[in-house]
Image 1 (spheres, rainbow, N blue to C red):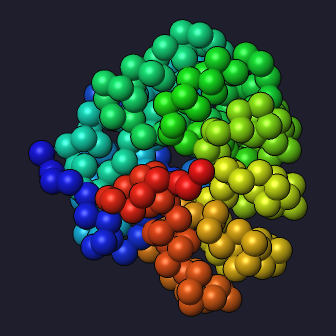
Image 2 (image 1 turned 120 degrees about the vertical axis):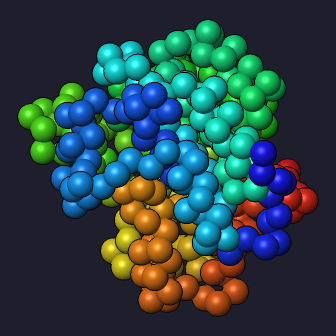
Length: 299
């Protein structure tokens, strides 16, 4: 069992990495959707790292990582990787890994009970939603019992926003509807659950301005920068990260489809103020996640 996380010694906290394969070899996505993702990210022949391998990778780099899978069984028919397995594996590497869970919102109140159990018994620190793959609009009332539980538990909800590479190029996009990635749908969630901490994942193409507007207007809405090389960030995202949202923008890679090595190398080359870089790379996430004595998010 690894020791406790020492935030002061970390170079960065990556808030967006994926557990793609379970200990028994079960994948988080169907082979068709996984192949489409590999094609989109030019990641042919890439191995799917185990959680133990993710831990070793981040430990070597003196980084911490949030790890999650996606439960989209209702929409896809593909069983997810067990949240319990993810949480237990992360607990074995508590010095560098932070477990998030994913619960299919179509589970309704049963999902809310599962959320409470995962936080209280398994130490889960947040929840991942992928509305496009899970087949729901974020403001659909079917998800509200789950949001209510997450808000009460005081942990963040991370939502995929914008285009997804999963299903890209497959006829009909593999059944995945991009409209559910519009961050303006999550504005309703921020209104209806005013104490819920929300992370909008990725530069939200083609709705980048909407994401910036929601994060500027709603005090507990954050943005992670995963899924894109920083050299492709739209200029308004860089401008807001340097100014109005400097305390609400978070480093995320999308590992293993994008490595933190590549992301950080490209991040060095964009015009982020020196005093803002440590906020994005570590300080904002440490505060949001309540890590290592950094304190909780101020109310």
